[in-house]
Image (spheres, one colour):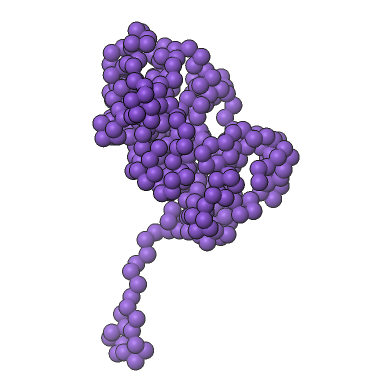
Length: 324
């Protein structure tokens, strides 16, 4: 059941203000904490969960928590900050930073100058490199999921499409998304850094041309053709136009396989590395509390070191020299 205004969550710590939006898997709400500060609460939607069998639902909840734990460790200026995961009833939720500002879809009412567009793309590209190094794929990079902080030329990646790797047809795209590569539409298809390369290249296409590119599905079915960006906007350099087309190749193996390789094609300098991993005690305790209810599976895989192999059982009357 969807939450409504003034509903209380997490032992009355958070109060719902309104629904912000719905994705393929989850619902996002604007909320406030006890001090009146705004934050975002995200959870898997009841509508989606109701379509799953009990075991599938449990696996998805565990995966959602496991990836929330990873995201909660990020302290990167271009990645939305996850404050803490928590349990509301039987559903795993995330309390996240509320980024004040506008998204790139609203900001780019017309084509942006190369320098400005590349600044945002470089920032998000560096953020995605961090995500990929941690074994995650965003899967939903697009202008509406990139916020510009109010008063700052700083882009922030938001709305992570979690449950990556959960091999169920319901986790694939069901409608044409102009920024999603072809593999997002195919159940069980391997996704990796090249998945986000396509989406970020499509985002740059939009920023430089002011036009939404045709979807990968339409292109694969021969219903639409992808024009070169500099055919639409002659101000776009040949180098950038070529790099965008390579990043938006339909076949995953024909794209740059890592984000850094694609950024190199753009010719943008590498950003200065920033420390991004930090385990917060408060977050850790919150995770432990949630995991206790879910059976500790997600935290087990995320934090527990590998255990030594079990010893073979030895009869109780075996010589002491054998009991090693």
